[in-house]
Every structure is written in C-alpha cells, then in structure tokens.
Image (cartoon, rainbow, N blue to C red; front, side):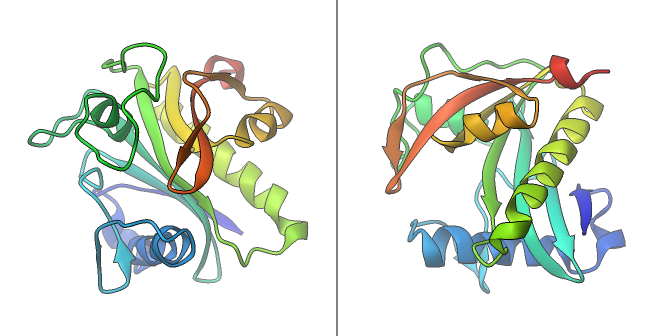
Length: 195
C-alpha cells in the first residue's frame, strides 16, 4: 500500500493517479451516495479542485483505496473560496449555511479537508489500516503546508476514529443531514502530531 500527496506540481510524475482518484470519487459520491456533483468522463470534480489544492491518495497496485482533498482557507477562485466557507455564505445549495458555530476562518495556518472517502470495496480487515494511512498522510501534508489546524466536513461517526488514531478533533458545528448522511464540521488540531 502506498500513500501519495498530489499537487499540480507533481501530477506528471504519478501517471494516471490523479484521474484514478477523481474516478474513485465519482464511484463514491455520484454512483453510490447519489450526490448531484459535476462530472466528466467518469470523474467527479468541482470548483475546489484547483492548483491551490492538494490530494492525498491511498493506493495499491494502481487501485485507489481512499482519498482526501486539502484546500487553503485563504484561496479564492472567482466568487469561491473553500467549500465550508462558501456553504456558510450561501453559495452552495446542497450544504446548509448553518454548518458552523462560528465564522469560517480565512488564515494561512488553517486548511480545509474535503471529499474524504474510503472506497466501499476495501475489505473490512483493511479499512482501519487504510484510514490510518490516509489520516497520517493528511496530517503530514497539512503540516508541510504550514497548517496548525484543518477544518473538515466529515461523517458524524468519524471523530471517534480520529481520536482512536491520536487526532485532536473537536466539533465546529452541529450534526446535519447532508446528501443523505449525517455529517459534522470539525476542527482538527495538528499540534498533537507535531513531534
């Protein structure tokens, strides 16, 4: 099993890994979760997949097992900034604007985590290992990008897993039904992993 952090600077060195990741997102979010998201050629993408973002992929012999996107909270592209802030500002129809207790941060040391998934065909005996690899690489990449915290919209049961693997994960908003699943915004401190 390998874990790779992709950026527009290194996509050329990883063959089809990025398009494979977008295809896995398509299967996860469009085919299985039935979310109405932008798509082309069997790949899911949106306005936050820009050169400012990074993508963490857990993969094995050309097969995507899991992934997550990291986006700086300081980034802007047209009217958009990052998903959670844009939802709070009413720019996204599919995510409620009251998803956070406080105003969405815009700071160089805060990054957003979005499009978190583990493929449904990952065997149960491998899932925890895959999740741990994904979280570890997300933390390492976020820290390398200067993040001291990550703001994420995740499944409501994920904070338990985060604590199990040593992440300081605090709810930043109420549990909400988003796209047919219970989700919650969380602040994840990178400080516990800064040794």
